[in-house]
Image 1 (cartoon, rainbow, N blue to C red):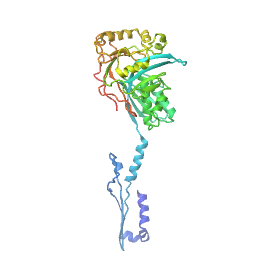
Image 2: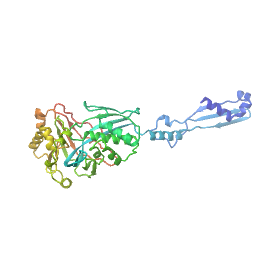
Image 3: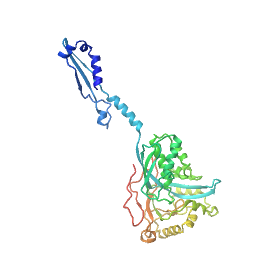
Image 4: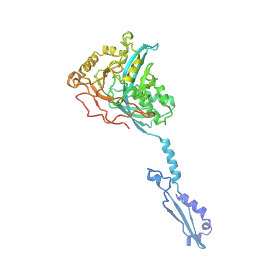
Length: 409
């Protein structure tokens, strides 16, 4: 400021330099900072530093008369314009997202492909049980960092979240890296697609941090490169999926979202690879999957339409799972419209009631059983899934949290 005022005095008052005595004897040079009137462009919520307005008054007197020159420097409009540009360029730095799982209302295996995968036809539907993932921009330009609340979940590049972020950078050329915390509530090895949902959520998050430079359709197409079930989560929440699962056809509101269900999963997991290894195509259902879809959309869920061709091989892998399903059906007193296994197991779903049969809590054989109520869930276009406030989950009868707090943003 000293240099600026010195140059200003030289340019405005050349007579004082020509007559130093007059300047010393009778004149004076005064500098005063003052607030200027608030600009109409002042932005609501701006910090004091943005609203501050600086003024500069310069006055001088001379022997032959008095002359005053005033210069006011008002940078507010320019400063606010720059601040708007900074805000726009900065974008978001943190994001908390709900990562819901899915069930297969029916699952037909229709053939084996030359690449070793199987063709399927299935009605996938997102449900209200899910994880929460917290993303923060990292100052690193070389590595993501993942943490989780559950022991045994990999936090290295084998995790689908990291694979999804690497895929996004590869496809878009962006260089954002992240700190990620996964608050896991969906059990693993459950046939609920929890890891696939995490990957889809990570792709959606990375796109938000980058200003949505990719379309949801592109995200959906890319995601099939790292997992067959991931593209489904870019539907609106319900879809008829074919191929390996990566061909996704949105089905609008096939089932009411207030239809309750209960999920019961024993501590043992089913290996998807082992289940498919034991699959015999000649033993699968021969019902037309499109007929199942039509029946569900027109008349709702019943035991007859909830076909899962992976149940027999899964029950071979885990005989106790077959026993669990039979016990739930035997205990049913009209509460459940259908009882079936989701995906490749090991979750048994009861549609129609949020409450498990009493034996799940009373029998010590099921003391470590995961139990959760849920309902169907969809999302709006260009928005991610939100967790219903009333979602609850139970992990075992020794550890029954009163509720799963809503953490969706």
